[in-house]
View 1 (cartoon, rainbow, N blue to C red):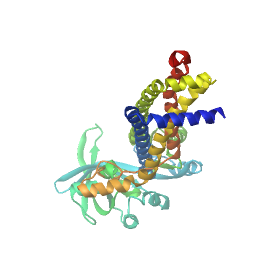
View 2: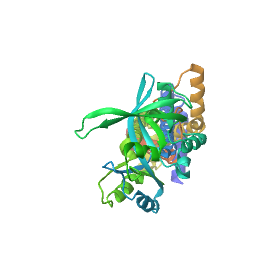
View 3: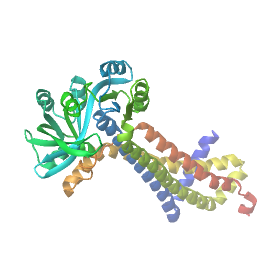
View 4: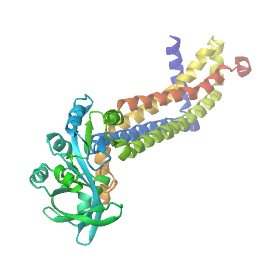
Length: 412
């Protein structure tokens, strides 16, 4: 009963405060600040969630999660048994042999450094790459030993199209580790890799057998690539099987090659958390100012309540509820605005890009060319909790000051 009565009195005080122009403005600014901070926090966290989701579903569905490859040029010995052993692990989707060649692609006077991956294009591999490569290109690549699928950006830079031929220069060295004339191999372009970012700019796909023959790998494969159910298990899984091998091998995972993208997303997320939480905190300082001035304006009313038997805790509760009400209203406005706007952010950005004839995210630089969003209820709950807790804390000092008012000195 006391809590309900305190809530009613708090609302009465808020309504009478609105009659004062300055106090009304301070109250409005605190509500608007909390609402804006809540809205922007939810929206930016949703954008970060969207980037992380696209990283998992797009980039991490194409690049290998882990690699184990031989130190020597002989390749992985008994790679078939290693592949079967890895695929028996419940954390692994599939494993596939590969051979990697680094060299220069040449078309007329144009040169481009690239890394060619020789793969066994079974159903698992083609399904994994299907979001970036047309299935027709895989069919042509399987039938043509010297076919090649190039990243879209590479093809544009050296000026080649489908069925054009390109020269691939493989660096050679003699026994004294001195470079000799490079080996020149001619490939026919059978398709393009549409991935965006650095993948398009440096990656090409060829047949496993061709790649192994060009490097002189007798075992048939330089190493094994892993695709995992959870990409974040890569470090542990790769080292588990790498350490079991008798021959010396290199071990790598996606966190070494593309981990900086995920780290950047997490860093920006942390900055967003800190900065916008501080924005909400600054908005809550307006709650302090509003309530302090409200206490001064309501001294007589407080003194009368104390004379009628109101306890210190009851007086404190009135102003705590008043601050909490400001926080509730601001948070409600911010959350509702976020729930309405965030799902349409991607379409809105696309419309603005078409209107201004510009591109916010270029596929030549980033692995996606749109602004993704993914609204998570955990972020909404976090934002609501932060806003309400800070509003309540901000109201504590004015509430404590109101409870110390002496009725005799005020009413006299």
